[in-house]
Picture (cartoon, one colour):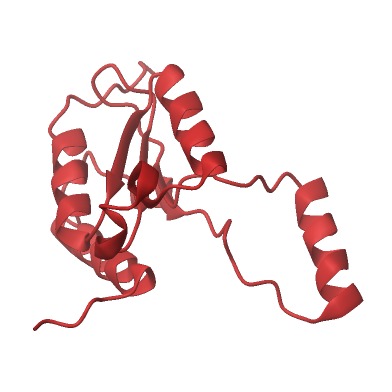
Length: 141
């Protein structure tokens, strides 16, 4: 049996492959493809940790924001959001999404974003390929 990879490993594999796959495409802007470390572990304990959480929330950190964003408009979409989950979460209630994640993804969809929940690196690559196959919307300079 193949061991289950962590969400981190799947996401890291996806990001590495995406950068490799699109490295020579002139219409891919790597600076606009990034992870949002929203579920990050906050260093410290007790009061220090609590202080940092408050600090980051004041700076605009929000719960539920999708894991990866690509901010280049393509097709009818202003941007792409990919939420990564472990393979075993696929059959969980709401696909393993927390209520705040569902709320964010629905808000992004309502804003016209291309939104995908992916359960491994291969699914995420398919989703990004589909997005990258849409025509790039570059405003005239």
